[in-house]
Image 1 (cartoon, rainbow, N blue to C red):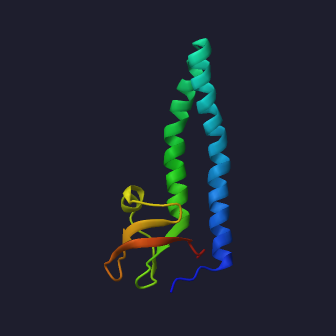
Image 2 (cartoon, helix red, strand yellow):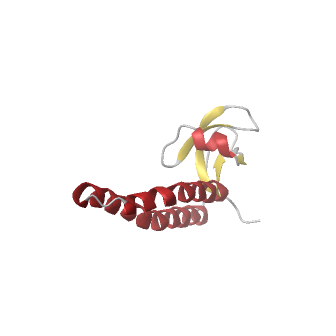
Length: 117
C-alpha cells in the first residue's frame, strides 16, 4: 500500500505554489497582450509574452521534474523517470503513467516530492 507522509505532501504543496506564483504574472502578460492586440491593435505586449513564454516553460518544466519523483503502486519503489518520458506521459494532477525501472510495469505512479540529499 502506498503511503505519503504529511511532510512530503507539504513539500509538494510548496513546489506547486512556487509554480503557480511564477505562472500568474506570465498569464497576466498573455491576457493583457491578447486584449491590447484585439482592442487597440497594440502588438508588442503579446510579442513580449511570446519571447518570455518559451524560456519560462523550459525553466518551469525543469524545476518541476527536478523536484518530483514517482512511486510505483505495484512495488512501491520511488524513482525519477527520464525527462522526456515524464514530459510526454499521460497524467492527472497527482499521477503519471510511467514504466517502473524496478518491476517493469507501466502503471499510474503517484507523484512525491524528491527527498533532499
